[in-house]
Image 1 (spheres, rainbow over the protein chains, first blue to last red):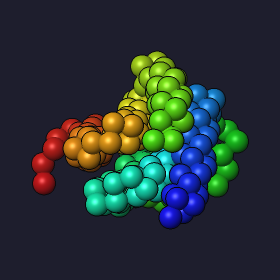
Image 2: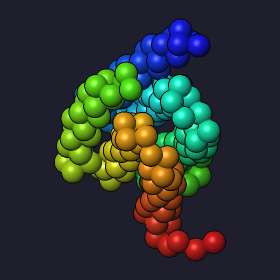
Image 3: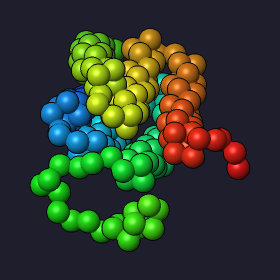
Length: 119
Length: 90
């Protein structure tokens, strides 16, 4: 039983380190990217694996100490798994509809008709 | 109680990245940059709350983290809806 506990804690440590790495990558993307579309891309892509891995690691650690109270972390994961991509999508739609300019390297323009209709 | 040091280090690193995101949230050129910064700061704060709950082993802190996640989501959606339509109806 003690071996299972040690193995779960090592797995939890690996998950937490990976999650914090994804958060650092998201921060670098938010600071360095040139326009709001690329920044929102970095934020959405970096945050979702970050909180998934971090909270899964904390859940595994919680299982080894107090398993009866660990379901709340699963509720937080379930809520943020739906909420975070929807929020980033809403931010990008707001950018697009209010006409924020993008950098000239952006060439794919799939929603062109929608923007002209809005204008 | 093996992971306390790692969790404290993770909270320290997350706090530093929160300050870098606040740079984007305060000085961002457009409004969308500020909203992105606030959203990322909220996600990191929720994760830091869960780390604190794991350090102190109190499951009541997880309720605060859940509430903060919901609050950040509603804040982002309300900001965007107000700035796009200039009203909060429907």
